[in-house]
Image (cartoon, rainbow, N blue to C red; front, side):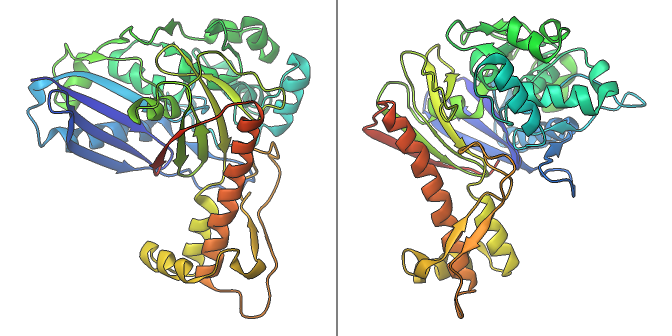
Length: 395
């Protein structure tokens, strides 16, 4: 009976699940924590790609320890989007730390590319990060031989083949979503060398390949195990939630907060608030993303030394509206609205209101209203939903 290994490479961790197809059950799990590299530079969010590989090894081994690994027939990877994962060395052949999708240092480059291309690119998109790299770390950019994303980087480690698919490529800012091909003109606007650095694109039913013997041995799997193209985390979340047709919406809550649903046609929003992504099946995935969902609430919880259970209990005891305290949660700049240089703000504090439970709840309410603004933008484009799947994740 066939088993399938699923890997999710997120910002806060790598998760692995083993899925038993005949019984339609998850029969084993594994996890490995990740974090951003420490920094005092505003807007910077970096991770080392080796940490993704370490996480894949550890999480997969944990999950596979409890099953008959010889039954595993294929592997699928869900990857955090937008982060640029170039194949490049920095001294002694060591891989450089790479910009995470939450990095907003490229806000100026986003404005310039938007004006040049006549579109709206936010600082999260990969193209803006590549232009930033070209300007601020030219020696690293000059050494770049290929441009990948976190998910396709892991697939490369698994198979030895560099490739990408439309769902993940949609978040680069140099991809023609309607035609499902690279936009060479947009790529050349970043750098004339960039079109030649982009990997080939695969369809949703094409395998990247089989496991490299070395990767197979490290994971404890056979070298004939197939590796699917996978997709970006949101496209894979839609698939896993059963959201596969018009009228269905996923609300995904984690470091970022995301709303997305499947569409039979590409949705182009001139404001850039709705990202016109492709999904993992050959359709499209209009998406709204806020950079700050759980971030502000976690900052408040940690500042008061509360456990998750304590913060939840205290927040539940506070009244809705938090007695007029408003927590604008844009601690890391924001993508929706497109304010990459914004900061978080707490308004309405009065004597006696500086309480952990109240500020925790105010942060949650602020994140909720931020998501509501995104939903209203989708409704304004006549994207109407009758079914909602709620996903909570860390990473």
